[in-house]
Amino acid sequence: MLLAGVAFYVVLPELSHVLGSWPRLRLLAPWWLALMLAAEVASFLCLIALVRMVMHAKSWFAVASAVMAGNAVTNILPAGDAVGAGVQFRMLQRAGVSGAAAAGGLASSSVLGLAGLFVLPVFVLPALVGGLAVNAGLMHAGELGIAGFVLIVLFGAAALSGDRMLVGVARAVQATSNRLRRRHATDLPARFLAQRDATRADLGRDWLKATALVGGHIALDYVSLLCALRATGASPNPSLVLLAYAATTVIALVPLTPGGLGVVEASLSGLLVLARVPGADALVATLAFRLGAFWLPEVAGGVLYLLFRHRYGRLAAPSSS
Image (cartoon, one colour):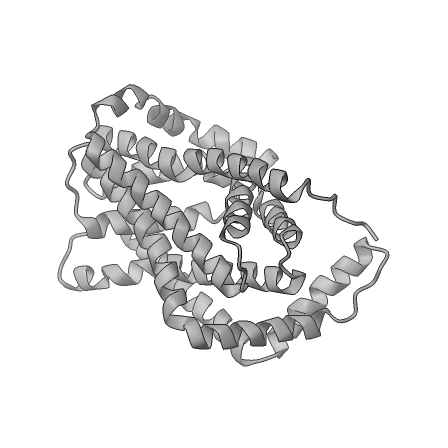
């Protein structure tokens, strides 16, 4: 919370500028706003389909409720990623998904999503090679994304092809868990390896579908940003906007504030200006994009959680034994 407070203090002036663009929303082209919201809905549907596929869940409603409610919790609490993942895990278990399948599916979809985010700058390479003039700040963001993609690939290769790294991680998690709980777990490395093998087999059969869903989730979110920009009347270079979008998503991975609130607005609006978007258009486009990507999913997550409780009952408190 202290880190979140400091981060809010630093980005407050820029966040105020973005929120101050609220009256200009009524001047945006309604058809482009409708396309922006449709792209964002389709992006979340791709994410839900990916999670459902990797954990072999049958119920679309249970997976959608868990994903959206977990996303809402993540965006409400400082460093809420762990709490959001816990909410998703407990909701999936309540809906009848096994613990191993839920944990493995959530982990696999997270790693695939990270790999997809870091690969974004790679798609701008043809434009850069072709002589596209890029601001130095955006160029550094692209280099960071490419480096992150290489690390993700190396991590994924090590996890999928060998046992040593995964067993080491499992033992560290097991040791920490055993210190916090009375009932000691002893089979976590074996369970990690079994779930890894199952995930590897699933991706081997459905790798094309998984790739399409990851790409669809990220690409449609990016298209939503382009639609928000077009709603202002701006016509920026899509490659420069992609670099700004990629840099913002990398920055948002650092959990300084809940859901990157404030940090994302400040970063995205500033980077869009570097991508040659007029300042006023960058502010109002950022506000419109965040309404679709951040605030509306919060409402949807709350509604789906209430519907989930009506169908499956209240979630039990985590056991301490």
